[in-house]
Image (cartoon, rainbow, N blue to C red):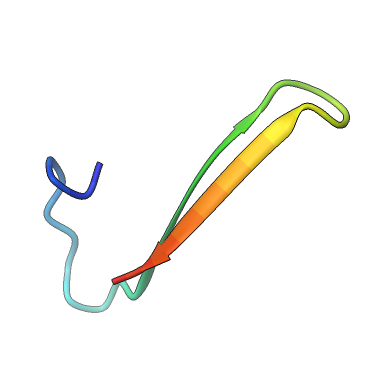
Length: 32
């Protein structure tokens, strides 16, 4: 995502997640 999308300068953190139901999600984040 970070390679393909050019974020504006005011974006400081990106979070990506998948939620497949109760107790079955995964999330990751990265400071820009």
